[in-house]
Figure 1 (cartoon, rainbow, N blue to C red):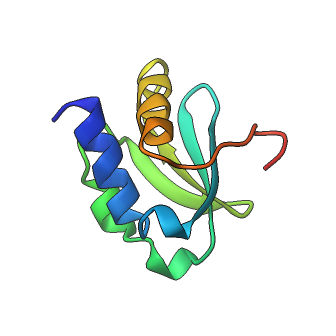
Figure 2 (tube, one colour):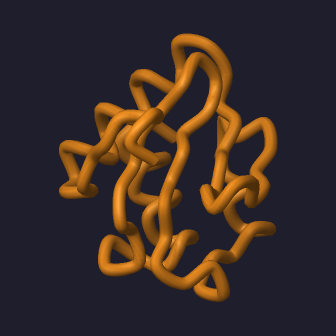
Figure 3 (cartoon, one colour):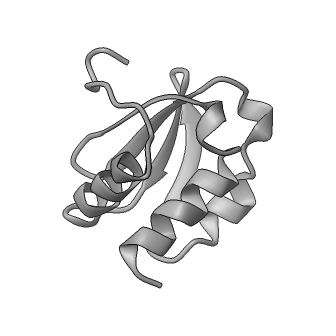
Amino acid sequence: MNNTEIAKSVIEAIGGKENVSSVAHCATRLRIMVKDKEKIDTNRVENIEKVQGAFFNAGQFQIIFGTGTVNRIYDEVVSLGLPTSTTSEM
């Protein structure tokens, strides 16, 4: 599975683009503000290649990819149309 396919799988598993308010990342995690957390299929997210874990914390759905990988996945989800913000804005 390449990074574009992983990004598409993440978007589908979190309820689609329409469920995302914004996305950002830190050193290891993709941080997603969602509109409806009930639409997230956490088990599906955790079974996507390269995902090391996923959880909801401080109003954000966080997906752990690890250093370096998270940057590439972030670039892909943004190129697929997810709105962005900085971690401090979140």
